[in-house]
Image (tube, rainbow, N blue to C red; front, top):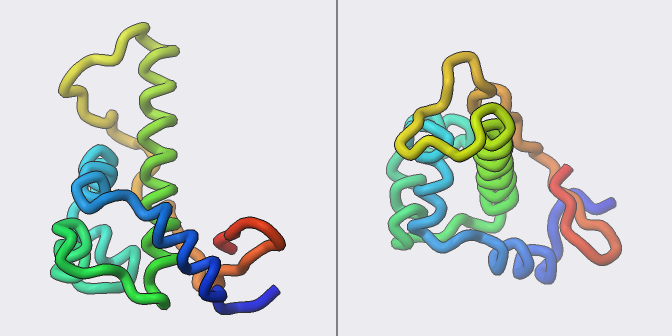
Length: 123
């Protein structure tokens, strides 16, 4: 499998990237600071802020990593919502994540994105 994504795979990733306000919402719902996100993606806090404001777009090199982190955070949010429904019925508005939940420290984006025959796979 190639180490670099081809143009089609990058275009698919770019189309899947949430709109800027949703990027920020995903991060905030996961209770992740700009600093934590920046460290995880290996960019500056300003870069994350610019992406979340829609003023800049992730480069070809950073797009796969950023997308993987967003996907992982969104999955955590879905897992928390599912746990809330199982544990207590309806979700509680304004509820914050309980302590000792999985945090961004557990998310390790891959450095080597690959592409399969018909879909993008991120390592």
